[in-house]
Image 1 (cartoon, rainbow, N blue to C red):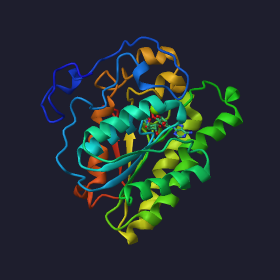
Image 2: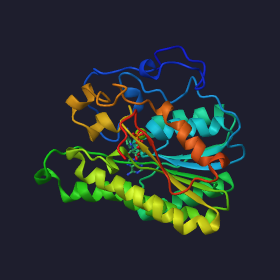
Image 3: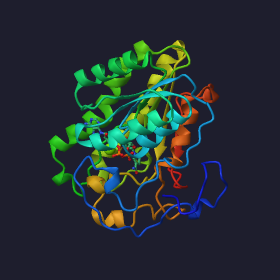
Length: 302
Ligand code: NAD
Ligand code: MG
């Protein structure tokens, strides 16, 4: 969906003009949201991402790999030479299938593991299945997330508060705990946090707290597992054009102007963040652990 005709992600162009800017149409859809329902269509690098063998032979699990940031990461990993397992919710099967096809078209093994990460037993089952079907686990991208905007604390229910923490914070603990026994020196864990950890919006009280949890978890776990030669880092996105936002993550009037508060005046596209996940997964980032890499369109929250 890039505006200019780019051949691949290395082509030089003006980043201000690279992708659509607001206003965008209102486009409510039920959670968890589907990527093909979005207008304009997000760019996950389907047409453009060109691999250079940076993850050759690696085995990766990407949660939330059907759409948005996880989908762009799964595509990039496969084109960099990794076999990839993706997790998503059963309601997202259509998006999941598209990603499985893209991984296979890159000549790599693809494994689909649909299921709900808010359940501890499923998290362990998912990780064990990924490791057994892929024949190991070198890269874990803990990326699934849930975001529901509520303006007033008086309207924020305990049920929502719990669900947000289950998916965004507890699942990370369960998934990483299950993944570490499969990992060898050189393995990499990447956790999707958010600009919200540092500069929270008033209507994302529960969500912003879970994203701060993600940052503290990254830093503490990185110190705990460096003695095993395993790196743990986080990517903190600014506003990205994904189904998370129109499916309840933002009120519809905010969708119309989504990304306008960045110096670029536009949201990021998933294809623009996947390279950060590639770098952190690859051996090129051998001296990086406990880091939070911001990809925020210049919002600079920290
Ligand atoms: P997305 O909707 O495309 O991806 C989120 C995915 O989470 C969904 O596809 C779904 O598969 C998964 N998910 C949600 N609940 C689940 C559950 N109970 N069980 C299993 N999977 C579940 O949106 P995205 O923006 O690509 O989100 C990816 C990550 O990026 C999230 O952690 C989100 O918090 C974070 N993030 C997004 C933005 C943004 O502006 N889009 C900004 C900062 C951080
Ligand atoms: Mg999805």
